[in-house]
Image 1 (cartoon, rainbow, N blue to C red):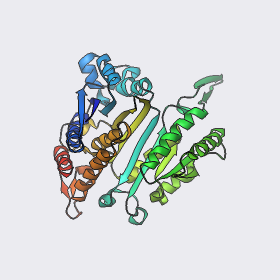
Image 2: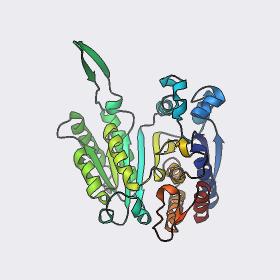
Image 3: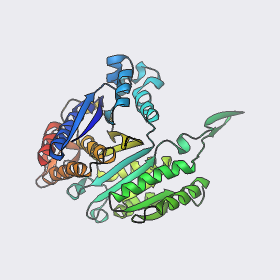
Length: 368
């Protein structure tokens, strides 16, 4: 039996309550698909401050280092932000520190709209086809967000100049391209690489390197698309896409645009992947949404994004494709059966049943 060590960092706001449901589903998947879990909880975010005086306690970071993957909830309580300097706030001191510590260079954000939730999508039904299913893959540690020099200069006379440097190396592009092609192999075997090769030197290099790497994956269809056209096509015909491969800034923008297609942040998981260690890819798995403190503790938060994050963990860190598929199918079965948290509920929908966080988790466990 396979056994995996997972650091469970629920964090703030709705994090703890949706994490409870995700762990329930994960344990059921372990029983069904014959793997065992060593789940260890630790505080992070403002919970980390309360426990140890900082957003990422030393003991929490040490646990992450000893684990095979991190299952993360959410951090941030805006009401408490003024009490500490900016660099100590959870979004910087916990999230960015973890990304840097573990070299999490590949961000995967699946955007899936089941046919049963067509009403939640802002697009007309004829643009949704039989349902939207896209994986946006974003390079997370390079590009204009991290390139140097990065500065603002005073030119005198009230005039300033701001400089951000867009820079990529061949190795950085190759690394993320391999992740993209491998992900496409697990899906519908199509990869669309996004660039701006008509005006940017980085775009030219990006296209050349992705094309070269693509020759190693003859079973995956590769197309290239300029980012402005890609943004338009997401709204006109999103069903044409399978995997979207993007550099850092383009991926940041397009993943948020694509997220709107699913109708609710409560439906969107994400994964950030690092290096392979002992045949396991270390990953950080979290919902795409935030801590939503205004609804915390009310049993109304949607746990599906957190639950689907466990499926990504099983697939990308542990290679348990059948178990990952099982969780995703269980979510689909619950939705098709009419199970709805408030964010995806429409009272005019026939057969829909509005339910709470715990009830949705129970329904998915039952479906699994």
